[in-house]
Image (cartoon, rainbow, N blue to C red; front, side, top):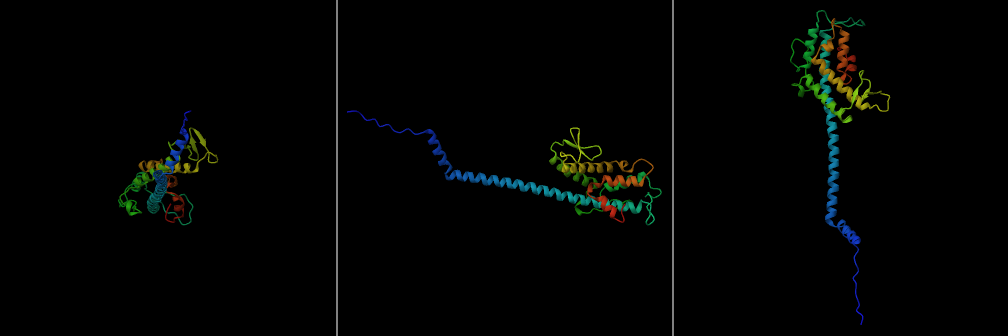
Length: 250
């Protein structure tokens, strides 16, 4: 009698692997793991986004506060100069403005030193008060330098590595020696504004450390001094326009 052989069906390794994979996917522990990763990753991304927005908003608010403090001190300084150093002009006169007789370059240098110093320190020269109480123990230079650092952060964000610079006349961008005019598609307005702000802030710092940059060569020229002063400290945003409308300022 012939012996019957019963061969068991062989399982396909690929099907076996697929079955185990789907069993794992449908298991509670895998779904829990997937949900945890998805929610955790989403929460992290949202938190990072929110922190970035909050940080940017805080920097903008800090910038506004610093500019308010600087603007207020500059306005006080210019009003004092107008009333104590300038030669009074007849009403309606369009004649060239001039300093009062006896005003010297050394005096102007001392007045600029008062501006850069702590508020409420001077009795004989310009008496400048802080605008916000938190800045009572901060001199003008330190406030200006904090503003400069914030502006450098904006520059670095737009131009990592600081590859761009301003042209000599500060009207264009320069990259690797090539000038990029404002009407060029490659021109970046936000970067140009950030670079301009940083350079003006640094100009203000240099001018207060070296008053001769503002005073100029003898003989003293009132209009040249006022023009250099306003141009240097235009960093505080529209200060020139404010002063032109102010009846007691330059």
